[in-house]
Image 1 (tube, rainbow, N blue to C red):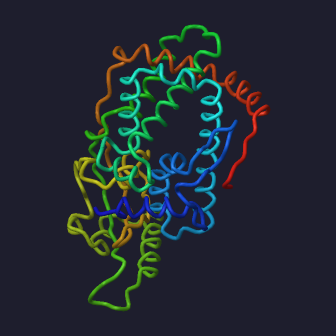
Image 2 (cartoon, rainbow, N blue to C red):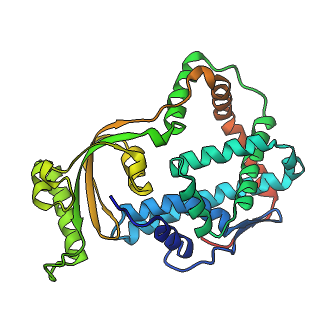
Amino acid sequence: MRFLATLSLVAAAATSISSGAIKVNGIAATANGELVTMNELMIKLAPMQSILMAQSPRRGAAYEKTLSEMRTKILDELIDRTIIYSEYKDRLNAIPEHVVDEEIEKFIQRSYAGDRKLFRNYLKATNLNFAQFREQQRKEILVSVIKSQQFGDPPPPTDAELRLEYKDWAIANRDRTKDVATYRKIYISKTDRFDMAVTPEGQLTLAEDIIKQIKAGSDFPTLAKKHSKDSKREVGGLWENVPRTDLNMEFGYLVFESKGSEVMGPFEDQRGFTLFKVIDRKYGPAKALGEVKKEMKQRVNNKKKNAKFEAWMKKIRDRVQIKKMIK
């Protein structure tokens, strides 16, 4: 499986946030005298946009709307972070280096399934060096610290609350390099060197038609044998026990971060379109609840504080000057 080259997607995401080009090294917003740069916005947006691009071969209005919503949400979060940083930046250097290291590692695991080379490629594509990214993460930690310090502690979480929080945490913080999946896949090439009449547009239409047939009850293996152009065609498109590390980041995300077993696609890569149906997901391991119980207590408490935090942030936003350079 060769999904759209990651750097090609990121380069597209980095140079064209909407239908118009935007300089990556520009300013996205100002808040309380501090800058929110395009670099900061892109490092958070690029992984999600690359997946959205793979999910939306035709792009179009729905793609632009989703991308705009993603961008707005991330920019608002960055503005809030910047406001808090402007108020409490004298505490920034008090954050221990090992805490920053841990946060960076979590980010790489969540966004790039532990692939440090891919992470470095994204930094390069978004014109951000590691030292700059490190300082961004330090600011993220500062916001979390201030948020937890601003409000009194709620009642201690119950065992049921801790178990529920751990269930979500374990999925999000598992070792993604150990994820394994079994799925059926149909791969439709964009062109055919033996048939010049075959066009990408026609093949996309074919892929969309196959999706409709499967959802209407047609047999996936039969359609795979008829249409698929990969090495598993003769076995009905069955790929068994495939490690996530064998998959491109975008396709790995689609397989492992989605839920259910409904047919999905078509998804675009440089050579064609893919549709697939997950049969089984085996997730990588996470730390046991006993090892992270203290963190679970903090997470439950933080969720309970969110309403107060939002009210607090609204008061701060109302008294500081905010200017968005992009919409």
